[in-house]
Amino acid sequence: MDVNGKIAIVTGAARGIGKAISIQLAKGGAQVIATDINEDDLCDTHDELVGIGNKFLISRLDVTNQESINTAVKNIISEFSSIDILVNNAGTIGAPGWEERDVPDESDWDAIYAVNVKGVVKITEAVVPTMKSNRKGKIINMSSITGRLGTVTSPPYGVSKAGVINLTQAWALELAEFNINVNAICPGLLWTPMWQRIAHRWSFDEEKWKGYTPRQIFDSTIKDRIPLGREQTPEDIAYVAAFLASDYANNITGQAINVNGGSHMN
Image 1 (tube, rainbow, N blue to C red):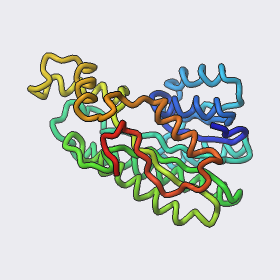
Image 2: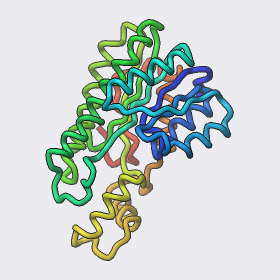
Image 3: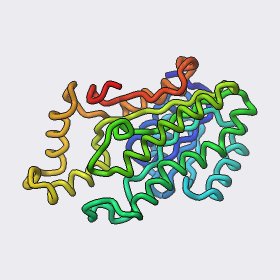
Image 4: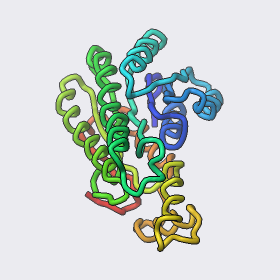
């Protein structure tokens, strides 16, 4: 998808969906600023972007820390003069040690809300003034199918992703007069490090899954829940993100687009 010459920030770009989006945008011609809370984890993303050949930047960014955000945005504008695309992908499923808890505790609620909701608000509010000044921009927020459906595995995660959809719709209305499109993507089931940890826990905690490997649990879940019968991939999400970032999506705003193989259709 053509995003040639656009300046794009991607948060949570070290792995999985964020890495795939960074690569896809770069392949479309964008100059990508790939960010993550741990800059050392961005090595693979860095190497992929080097191979594509466009100008890019690897930057540490903690979306829960306003000073980190302000510094990063200031440096990006100084280096690239503008910001055309913001992909809010950074997210968490709990506080450290969440895998060991039978149910999420207050620390999980706080950690999830700080990253998945307040982090999205903070970085968006830091970037929007530049987009308003330019009277154009594309903001893409990463929600989840759990933002549309209740989940017993992690209610705070689902609540946070429902909040992302609400923020998306509110900003779409607020920013339309500035020619800024705001949309969300709701991924389904992806074999990511986060899902691997969930499946690993189920293999010990759930009687149904004892004796199964995490990958076997995941494959069985795909078979049971996905009408198309195949898992979603980071690249699937990246293609949609690149479309929403392009001029082909100029008349799309306030939408939360499912990429879930048909598991949920509303």
